[in-house]
Image (cartoon, rainbow, N blue to C red):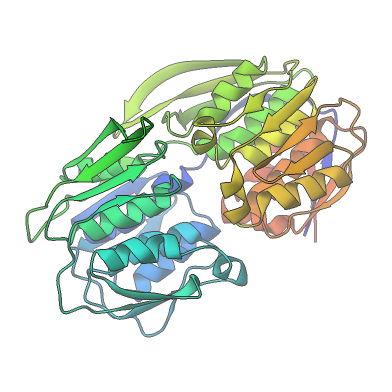
Length: 445
C-alpha cells in the first residue's frame, strides 16, 4: 500500500490519540498475571498489541474488548496453560521479551517466535541474565526463536548491569523477579522508561529506583525489586491509558514544519523518561506549550500545543538518546527543514530496531532530497527548506514510514511511501488523524 502526502496544507484543530503502546503492552500482560478482573480503558488496538493478546489467549487467558476498553480475567502468576504451539510474537520485540520474563517462572514449556524481522533482533540480552536467574532458556544463535523449558529449581534474584539501557530488558527481568526467591537489582547506564515500575507499584509490588555512582565515577540508575511474598498476588488494574507520546511526536513535527499550523494534542502521556524529543525540539526553537497537566494512574498527562516554527540545527547525544530512542525518525524530519546542521551521536541502538534505522533512514531520506550523512552511531542532516519529495520505501518499519510521510508536509512535491500498511503496527489512525487536522494524505492499494 502507498501513502501519498501532499505538501503545504496547514494542520489546525485538536485531537485525542489512542493509548500509549508501551503502557498498553504492559497492561495486558500484567493484568493477566494479577488475581481478578482488570479494566483497561483507551487500550491501543494495533498490530503489536493484537499479537500480545493472541499470545495470552494461547496461554489460557480470558479477555474481552468493548470499543477501546480491554477487560482481562487474571488468575495469578502460575496460571498460564501450556500453549499448543509456538507463540507468534509477530514483529514485536516488546511482546517477546516481556513474555519471556513472565514465562520463565511459570513452569510451562514455551517457544517464542515471530516474523523474519523479529528473528534478526538481538535476544541474548534477555537470555543471558535469565539464565543467571536459573531459567532454562535458549536462543537460536542469539535471536528468536526462544525456547523456555520448565525448571525444577526456583528462580533466584540477581544483580545485573545492562550494557545498554533498555526498558524491555529491564521489564523482562522484573517480571522474572516476581517468581524469584530473593531481591533483584538492575543497573542501567541511563534511566530508561519506567512504565513497568509505576504499574507494578500500583499492583502492590515493592520496586525502588535511585541514581548511584559507579566505581569509575559514572552516574548510573539502579532499580530494585525486593523479595516478594510468596505466593504473590498482584492487584488487578483499573486504569485509563494516556495518549501515546510516540504517536504525538509525528503530529508535533508535522505542525512545526508546515506553515500556518496550530494544533493541540490532548491528554498525552508526559512521562519524563519518554519526552526527550520535546526538550530537543524546544532547543531547536520550536513553539511548544504544555497545559492541563495532571497525573492519571501514576502517569503524568497533559495537552501539547504546537505552532509552526522556524527551527535551527542541534546536536543530540548522551542521556538524551534513551529518552527519545523511538522518536529519531520524527526528529530527522524536523531536522530536514531546520536551518543549519543537526548531528546525532551515541545512537547505535537504532540499528537494532524494526530495521537498521540509521541505515534505512539515511537511504530513504536521501531519495527525497534530504542532505543526510550516515555515521556509525548516528547521522548528520543539513537542513534545507527546498527538499524535493518523491518516492520512498518503509522497509517494514512503522516509524520510518510515518517519518518519511512527514517530509511530504513541507517538500516541494508530494511524497509517496510504499509499504505504508506497516503503520498499523502502532498507529492505525495515522492517516485519518492527519486528515481530521487538515492534512492531505491518500492511501492507494
